[in-house]
Image (cartoon, rainbow over all chains, first blue to last red):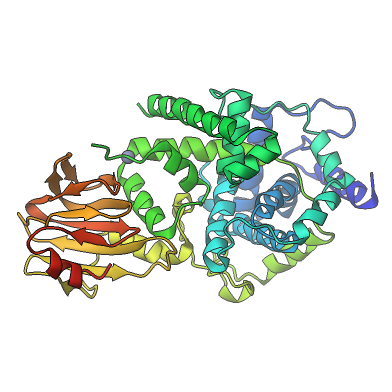
Length: 221
Length: 235
Ligand SMILES: [Zn+2]
C-alpha cells in the first residue's frame, strides 16, 4: 500500500471511530467482514442523508472515497484522464448541492450518482462532441490506474457480490450489452476486447435485447 | 402500431447516448408513460450497479481537499443547500440549475431543460410559428443536433396532412391532440417511429394536433400539394 492509500485509509478509519451516529466503518481493512450489498446501499443512503441535513463533510468524504474512483472510470470512457478528474469533481459538487433532492425510496445512491454523472456526460458531449474517441493519454493512464490506491479500495469490496440488475442475461450476454451500451464501444471494438467475432457480438446483442425486451415489459406490467 | 420506445433506444437514452432531438422526445414521452418510465428506471438502476461494480481509477492527490475548498465557495441558501453558481464552473460546460425536483432523471442536456419544460407545459404559443398552409404551421427548433432536424408542427382540426414519404428515419411525439394514419390512432403522449418505407397521409383529429417531428432527412411530400410543401417545409 502506498502512502496515498494509507493516508486515505487512515483518515477514513479515524473518521469512523470518531463519528457519533454512524459507527460502522465503510471499509473493512482490518479483517472484519465486508458489508453486504444491502448494508452498503443502506450506508450510502445514510451518507446522503447526513450530507443533506447536517452538511456532514465526513459522510461526504466516505461517499467520495467509495464512488469517485468509479465515477472517474465512467468519464474515462469519453474523456482524457485529467478531464475525467474534472468531471468527477463536478459530479461531487452536485452531490453536495443536490443531496436534499435525493429520494431514498425511489433509487439507490449508485443509481442517483450514475444519473448525475450521465447528465454531466450529456452536457460534455454536447459541448465537446466527443462521441467515442478517448484522448491520447487515456492509454498510458490505464497503467497508472492500476496503482495500489484503488486496489485497496476495490479489494475491500471483492467479497461483496453485488449482483447486477441484468440478472436475466447470461454473463456472456451481459458483458456484450455493457460493452456496447454502457461503455459506448462500437460492435467492432467490443468484439476485439471480448475476443469474439463480430458475428457473435451481433447475435449476442440480438438475443440479449430479446431477453431484455421481454423482461422489462413484464416488469412494467 | 408502436407508441412506446424500443428497449434498445432506452438502453442508449439512459446512458446519454441518444442525439439531443430524440432525447427530448423520449424525455417528453416517458414523463407521460409509466411503462417506459419504469423501464428507464430499471436500466438506470442496472447502470448504477455497474458503476458501483466498475474498476476504480486513481484519483489525484488532494482532489478531495480541492473539492471541499470549492464547496466553501458555493453560496448557500438559508436551507443549507447551495444554489448553482455559474462562476464556480470555469469549465466550458453549461450549467443550468436543475431546480429542486427530481429532474436529474431526464437524460437531456441541461441547456434543453427550458425547452422541455415549455413543451411539457404546452407553453409554445409565443414561438415564431411559420404558416405552411392555412391549416399547418411549424417552428424549427434549434437543438444543435448533429443528426436530426426538429420541428414543432401544429395542425388545425381535421387537417389532412399531405401524403408524404420519409426518406430517412422519422420520430414523432404527439404533444397535444391526435391524428390517425394507416397504423391507427396516435394520441397525445405517443411516440411513433417511422422508417423510410412508410408512405402515409395522416388525418388530424377533432381538436387539432401539435407534435414534435424529428427527421434525419427532409420529409418528402408526394401528393398534389407536394411541391409547395417541399419548398416551404424548412426541414
Ligand atoms: Zn411508453
